[in-house]
Length: 550
Image (cartoon, rainbow, N blue to C red; front, side):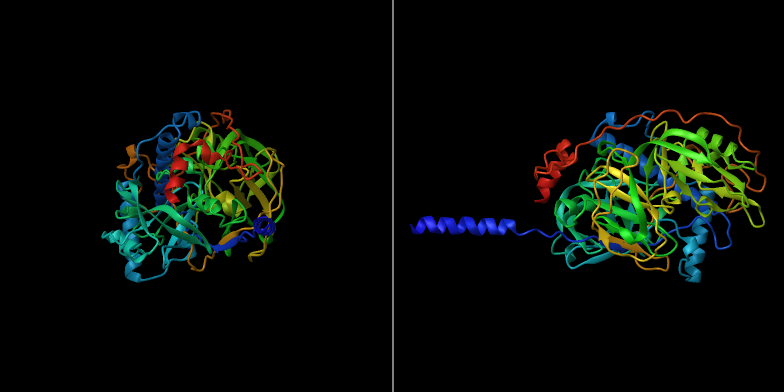
């Protein structure tokens, strides 16, 4: 009898315990700051800086393709995708940038908002916490920060990770290496430790404390990069930080949101910040096997007319300029009255400053407009009436019909990246610059008009004034390897192979956008708690990585 009642009591307690709801943490807002603008204080387009960022972008996505082939296979590549030669910063541009960096150090002047281009914020690694200023990059999938073992001059001004000072640090197998635009690498060992962003922690997070840091980051205020794309483009072959945090139950919603503005920018971790947008989200499917936040069926409208149609777009927070296929972009600018070629080698064009075109992207739902202010990268020179457009023609090797869409677009919308539904969503900005409460978002559908409220989450806000924030990621394309030795015009702001003071005539219309290759739809998790249908189970090495973490 005693045994019977003891068993009954035990079962009753177990059932009572099971009935207690588990409360997941709410989302967090993380402030972020714009790291580099491509417009100088006096409103002039910073050509040298744009070339540097373009080279970094080219090489970042080159490495992503290498990782994608290694992790999934060539079948995951888009039609026409190809690994290009490593791009290099042309020597004259590199010298100009080095001279500017040296002058800045002598003057001991803090960076101004106008001198900055990516969206960095603060994170911590280890126990006790070691703080770093990193770029939150939806166009890559790995985390790296400088190591205390890095003795180069490039690391001298960076915060450095000391593994011996962290009680939660552990070694992991392998080596991390990425090549950037000056011929040098970012490389180092692989470790695991606790990584915290905006109060949200992921334990046993794989990352690299790099002992070699490219000279490209010498004058950059950021310490490293935190990738937020799908694991299929991970160089580490491991889950990115946010995916790991979600698997560990550290966030209530398997999504995060970006709000990019002149003031009060933020990354919201674990959902969206409902005070920063209005109305429903328009969702568009992505395919985890491709690694990117890539959507299909896009149209570019110029002054109300379709200038390019049925192309694919990668939404990349680590990129400022918007990039499309060179011939298509040339055709787009030919439709703008008064447009001229500014830098043919790097696909840059101008438009009359006083009559900016109306630019909008459409994915089968509404038009999402790029304001004239965000499309304008600045005047070609002092006193000029020509301004450089934020759309450039570059073959990044991502595919015949694949465009790269950066913050020139993202600043016009509130963007949510949803791992649960494998979709990117856009919502209209509310005009509010303050962070607020999050709300739970409904699952997006495959329809362009599918909508849902934002999930609870943690957010990181970025301020332009100088609060700790994420840094610029390697993301903007520039001169190709074959053009790296060609000398640009004498002016530091002159393009590599064309003179901005003597622009060419408007490009002739040619080429077509072509058709987009459809992406597959991947299963989400089931409602019964069985995660066998989750996308990470389609790749055995992701499971292996998870086993290592436990």
